[in-house]
Each structure stands twice: as C-alpha cells, then as structure tokens.
Image 1 (cartoon, helix red, strand yellow):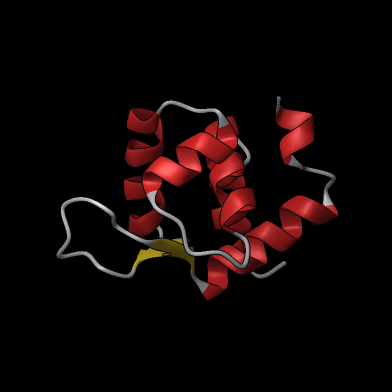
Image 2 (image 1 turned 60 degrees about the vertical axis):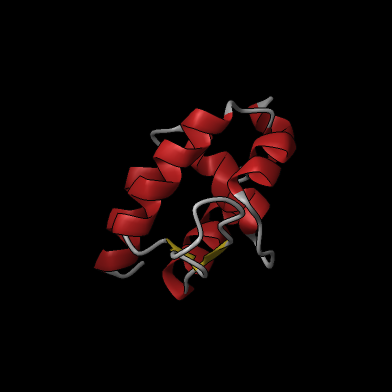
Length: 96
C-alpha cells in the first residue's frame, strides 16, 4: 500500500461514520441527506465528516457553490480506500 493510501486508510478506519460514507459513495454521487438515509447516521455527523474527508482529498464536492443539495463523490484516492475497506471485509452490514 502506498504511503498516501496508507495514511488515508488509517484515518478512515478509526471512524464508523467515515467508513459508512466511503462505502455508500462507491460509484455514486450523493447528497449529504441521501448519505444520511443510507447509513442511518445523523446528517450533522455526515456533514462534519464530509468536510474532513474533503480536506483529506478522499471526497470531492461537485457543486460547492450550492448551499443545499451539494453533491459528493469519491476521488481517485477515495476509490482506493474503498477498495481497501472491502478487501478487509468492511461492509455496511458489519457496521450496523
């Protein structure tokens, strides 16, 4: 695992909410509200963690200028982290 991926992965596995966000965003573009619904996590937690994940280049906001209905997707690094999570048996079912 490359160092950048290793650092990103280690920052994700410490948080069930971050893991859930990464798993639901795989090959999808979603709003924070929809992520909240799919993960059964509170939207304020989702918004906080999306900000952190964006700063770490794991997710990207596609329409930053919008105040509501912002769309998020995984970056290339985020997709690699998601692959590592699945390779290590993480799934939404194991987090509930």
